[in-house]
Image 1 (spheres, rainbow, N blue to C red):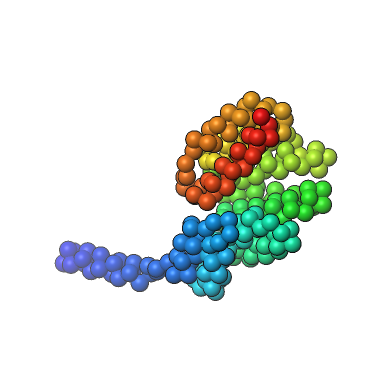
Image 2 (spheres, one colour):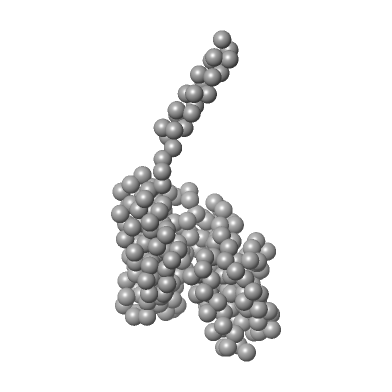
Length: 246
């Protein structure tokens, strides 16, 4: 009898798991495929269209942060300033909705902060100092949730803020280097960590050390947080920085 009860319990569990298991939203799957194959001029817009179709589905929160990521890429690649800021503005609104839908996940908060930063950079640092506070708020939240997200991505962006923002507005080049060193310790294989460590060191005149990190960047491949298009993008920035400081 006990064996029969155990069998019945196992069967019920299997039925429950089968009932609760749900296939990934096909629009998100299609969006991920398009985003993975993106170039500077194509792919991310297709991914965005798929993600937007999934906003009202059961995985809407995931679709929204992925749409924000796609808009960040589109804005970053745009050469026209008006188009660039329009992508970032749309991304910011979408990322805010994603944060509201899933405040305990790091993804939406990270991309909201990244969009704030890119939008501010497009407008000019001095014109966008009011965004520094909201950026720090989101990045601090990411660190509380998962400091290792994106290879220490929130620490990395906080470090970039510190060396780009003037001291009178709360920036600190010393703190920037400390944060970026911590990112390297978290994940030295992350190409973004190596690039921004180099850029931060160049900002404080430590050019020889900066070049060493650019050399490290040149040897890296993709990893879980840096895909092929990301790697090509950051390597190009690395070579531009090398030419600037050599």
